[in-house]
Length: 252
Image (cartoon, rainbow, N blue to C red; front, side, top):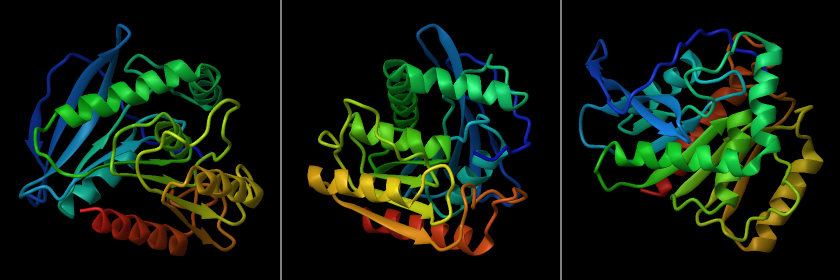
C-alpha cells in the first residue's frame, strides 16, 4: 500500500453543497452522512449532461484525498457520476504510516463494522441522485480489498472493480452472495497480493458461478496507478483505466 501525500480535511453534516469545475466538465459537491454516530464526507463529481452511470470509489489506506478526487473528476468528465467515498470518518487522524495501519487494521479486524461502513457509504451515495442508472463499486489498494468485501456481502450493484487490491478472502466468507460481475486489475509483481492469491480468488469466483475476469500487468508492482510512487507504472495505469471504461460500457 503506497503512501499518497495529498492532504484532505473532512468535516460533516447531512447536507451537500456544490460548485462548478473550471471548463464546465462536471459539477462538484460534498456528500455528508453518518454511520453509528460518526460523521463522514464524500466527494461527488457529476457530469454536466445526462449520467451514463454511477461509480462509487473507495480510497486507499491513507484515506480519501486528491488522488480519489481526481479519479472521480476524470469519470465525471466522461459522463459518469462519480462519488469518492470515505470509510474512516472526518475525525480520523491520517498523518502517517501508523495512522493508516490503525484505521485499516480496525476495519479488517471488525468485518461487521467494515461492511456497515461500505453499505452506508454506498447507500448515501446512491440516494444522492434519484437518476436510475447502472451503479458500480471500484477501489484502489485498500479500496480494492473493500470492493471485494462489498461483493462478498452481496451489495446490489451492477459491477465491482478492484485495482491492485488485497485479494485474500477472510475465513467464513465467500462469493456466493455476489450479485454482479467482478473485474480484477493486478500487477504480476505485486508483493502484497501475489499471483497465488489472484488464482485462489478467481477459483473462488468460478466456484460461486459469478461472472468474473482479470487483467494482469507483467512486472507491475502494488500501487501501479499512483503517480509519484515507487510502484507507478504508466503503461499499467493506462491499460487498467481503459479496462475499467470498457467494463463500465458493457454494463450500460
